[in-house]
Image (cartoon, rainbow, N blue to C red; front, side, top):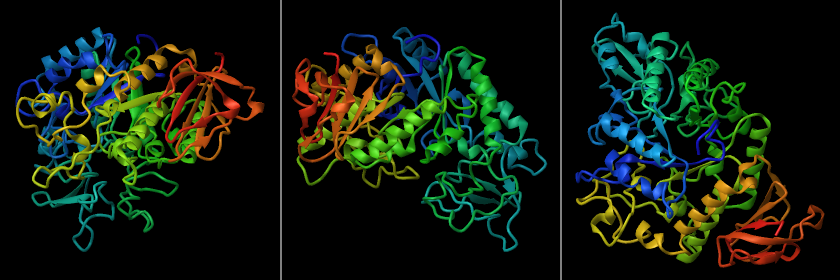
Length: 535
């Protein structure tokens, strides 16, 4: 997909490099492993058919937060390979029509970064003001009541004995926050962006950009905000540690950097559920191109919840923004686990995963898939001796399940860095099965790439009963999804002007080409249909 604003209607596949494929036999995923498996994603007859890949951080890092603690933004961590490998990956991906997005981590660095090493040597060092420092409170404690985003960490301040001040860290103490009010910091991070853009990267997923704006006076948060779970998300309250209005100046500057290169994109992981607050980060069309929808992936498995999200996403389009939809990522329990009902059989869990595939790929906007989502990977229990993540997110980050006829699921020739199940869904078993979840995703993404209605921003909600979420994409396609655990009538009101329709794709057993009467439509439990109303 080459051309201006390629990201509209694209499907972006998130790769967690540590867990995708190990080419050098050390049990850890690497860039060569990704290159070796690009054929799974695009460029061949039986490829998944995505448009872009997004790589979680590949920069040099001590891996306290698994790459989000960056020690050198312009070097590849040796675990993953070299800069030459990164260049080769970009070239190989582009040859298959795949865009490449990197994870940009602007809020903080590793405490092993040269900038911070210099900053903590003396208060007079030129790098001191590159980070956020403050004197102790009168009682000797932290300067204010701000909290880390990680519940296990607690306060967002660590005392530095040699210089007698506290430094701010929104995450672990090994991740000191940069001071974005310092023009030198902004200039350095813009240079980082140019370094990768010059190498051919097509844009960035910006990690937690709302954290770049902090209260300049470092004032306390109000008591109702001092709650570990509340303090990490934007809402209608005033959060002193995030979302200061100055953040929009910083984002406009970042956008100007990407706009100086053709067809590049900035996507923001803005921790906000409220749709109006989310739209703030588009600015006047001069900030982020897209903002992740925290509300969408936080929804329970209910029609009314996703119907509300659909309306919110339509409002984003009207406001001049562009919606996103994702159900899993490296910070979330995989949706195949999250939406599984322990009271029902495995077949029902599979049905929900198939219905979720239809939901993800037929709404207007940009779709994000997490590696393994296309085969229905679930969370994997991780023993305590493997669990080193500061926020306990290992179960959703386990190695890709390529082929369980091979040792370690085809991920590596040796024991992987995180445990894998002995059996389960894998690419090999699903690849040649026309009834598999992988085949359904292939069909859906092919329809998404080729059908004009799915490339349009047009969307209209349809009344189909409380348990069925139904919507139109222009005048031609109707999507209907039953979220109930029993059959439900999904009769489309006669005033909609729709009568008969042809099944284009089904998550269940209905065959494409079958004719259905929409006034008498009944959906099976967790069934989803894509219907062509023109026949």
